[in-house]
Length: 242
Image (cartoon, rainbow, N blue to C red; front, side):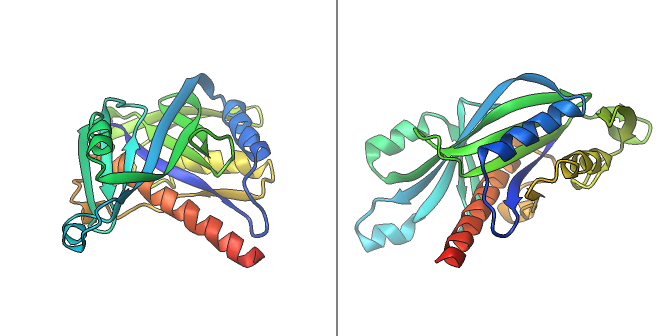
């Protein structure tokens, strides 16, 4: 399965995310030869236990994150960050939880936007908004590499255009988001002098019992992680204002 990195927009001190930044980032993807392929949407919900008896509450997680990914809408991923667990279930688990009234949704967020193809790379740029609302809470970017086999092992081919100059390169096996592709993407963003930058803090997948072979469970853990980071950043900004 292709490796994916999920990043979120970190505003500069004293600034916040807004629709103009989202528009600029989307335009940036198109300016470096990105071909718009359509729309994408994933959802994330925070659940809180409804158990009233303390003995029951001690036996089950007090809260967890549920995630529905665009690639696999018939699956639902449960990420229990406290116990470092990630579980893959059928999407019907949401209806079961609702009928049992075991957990209640506290907050539900949509991640949605445009998808672009750049050679053998795929970018998704999207907004983070509460379900049934257009109040912008954040901006995310998914970066996915599609690998092909070479004599040196898995690689990815890309062609980017920056300032009218096309750059073609083959990337070897990638272990972080600091490859040539990401450097060129960052360079294109810097030229727009936006008040912030994309941040990627990779979770410790081994803590969740996940193997090196990338899977959708890795993606779910990343979404849970960046959402926690965005909330922490937002709370920090609010505290500073107060």
